[in-house]
Length: 281
Image 1 (spheres, helix red, strand yellow):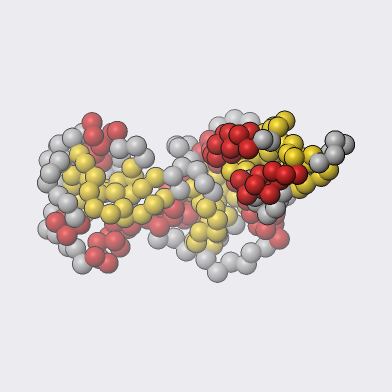
Image 2 (cartoon, one colour):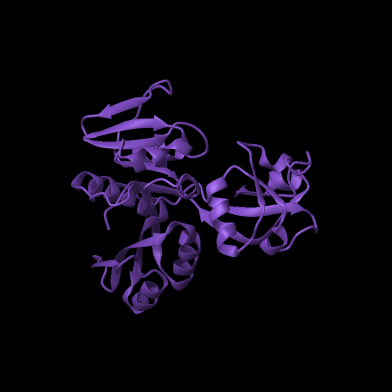
């Protein structure tokens, strides 16, 4: 039975649980449950603090887990990224009061507040910057105003909280993060993990693409295929009316309306878009 660690709270929890449900796995009925066995699918879930997921995976207590790339790297655990999951995207950035710093070099000798000590220490060492790291468990953006730090290093999604605290980001991102599936470093990729991985990949693809069907005259077919070439290639079938064809293709969800506009302007008709629940590519 595959043991899977899932974040029990925070911004990673609900999206991770939703993805697992879309992948066909049953989930706990109450947030008070610390574990849940899905015997039908041969897995057992353990609901763990997001920061601890990598620690449990690295120790081999569980086989795989879902956490943030930033939390994985900050943990220093004996675990590696297996697959990015395309949600909870963020960047790890430096921020300071407006017009006080422009590059990481200017932080030499300064105090930097963060909740990600290991990640920040590793980054500064690689850049040859010697700074004092002030550890905080949360509300890092308040540290400068309260006088215990000169700058901060934190995960940034929209930047609204930083601006409200009178801070601005500067320099290059330390890291681009998102939710990831992780496994123990050096562990075998078992058949159970391959099944989980395939299902999650199917959900990611289903969320990224739609199926588009349309009718097209043979004189316009080549141009229409150029507009929507599909993931591999379209399926094209002759219609009862001579010279007309039915076309089925996969289109990126983010581009579907623009593709529909272009196909309709070209002369395609009966354009229908269908969501994909899951897939295997």
